[in-house]
Length: 422
Ligand SMILES: Nc1nc2c(ncn2[C@@H]2O[C@H](COP(=O)(O)OP(=O)(O)OP(=O)(O)O)[C@@H](O)[C@H]2O)c(=O)[nH]1
Ligand SMILES: [Mg+2]
Image (tube, rainbow, N blue to C red):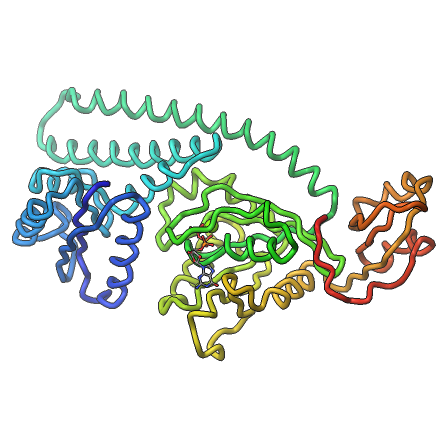
C-alpha cells in the first residue's frame, strides 16, 4: 500500500466546500490502495500558478513527506504539468492531482476489455494534455529570439503523435465492441421492455438497490458487486425485473463525482449509453450524507453533460436507516440495506415507465403461439407456466394493443404483488 500526503489550497471564498473536497480525496486515496497519512493545507486568496503552494508551505509539505515517508503527494487542486514537476522536485517524491488519482482507481478496477480500453484512452488523453502543457512552458522560456526548433519540441511532437495514434486505434477497438453490444441491445429493444437506469453519486447505493430488488424477486444468484468504496462499479450491468405483471430492464451504472474529469467522460462515453438510452433515470441519493444536496446537483449537472438531461428522473433517497427527519426528502425514501420502501419504489418505476397500461392474464394454446408472436414488439409477454392446454402468460401494454389477446384472457390482473423473473 502506498502512503500519501494530501495537499490542498483552500480558496478563502470556498472555505466551506473544501472540508468535503478533502474528505472525498481521502476516500479516493483509500479506494486506490493508498493510505492518506498527513494533510497539508493553505488558506489563500489565489493559487500560485508555479508551485500551487506559496514557498513557506511548500517547505512544510516537503517536511510532511519526510515525516511520514510518503510515496506520493496527492493534490486536491488541479495541477499543471510544470507545477507538478516543481513540487515533485521540492518534495523528492511523486506528485499527482485528483484527476490522476481517479484515473488510477479506474485502471485498478477495469476488468472487461471495454473498461480497459476506455481507461487507457482516458489516461492517454490526460497525458496528451500535459504534453501540450509542457510545450507551452518551453515556448514561454524560449520567448525572445530563439529561432530553431529545440530538441525538446521535436521530442514532444513525436510523443504527441504516438499518443494520438494509440488513441485512434483504441477508439476503433471500442467501436467494434460497441457494435457487438448494440446487437444484444437491439434484441432487448425488440422485446419492448422499458429501461430504467440507476444513476447517482458514487457510493450512494445504486448497486445495493439493484441487489435488494433482485433479492426481493428471489434472484440471489444474479446480484452485482456492492462495496463501501468509491467507484466499486465500473461496468454497466443489466437485469430484468417485473412488478404486477409489468416487466422492465434495470441498469446499474458507474457512479459520478463532482468535477468528473473530462477525459473520463469522453472515454466512458459508450458505458454512459445505459443512462443516455434509458426511459427513466432512478437517481439514487445517500440521504445520510449531510452534503447530499450538492452531490445531487452535481449528478444532475453530469447527466446534462453526457446528454441525458431530458430523461424523466425519479429521485430515490437511500440509507434511510441512517437518517431521521424524512420530511426534507422529496422523493421515494428507501433503505436498500433493510429492504424498506422497495415495493413503493417498484410501483413508482413501473407507473413512470408504463403510464396507462393494462395487464391481462392469458392462456395461449400451443397451436396459437405463432399467431401471437408478431405482437412481441408492441406488448410485453411474461411466461408464467407451461401447462397441458398451453402457455400461461401475463401480457402488458396499452389497452388497444391488448385486443388481439382478449380471446385468450383468463382474468384481469388483480393487482397483487407479482414479482418474478422474466
Ligand atoms: N446503512 C446503509 N448502507 C447502505 C444502504 N445502501 C447501501 N449501503 C452501503 O453503501 C455502500 C455503497 O453501496 P454500493 O451499492 O456499492 O454503492 P454504489 O452507488 O453502487 O457505489 P459505486 O458503484 O462505487 O458508484 C455499501 O457499503 C453498502 O452496504 C442502506 O440503505 N443503508
Ligand atoms: Mg455500484
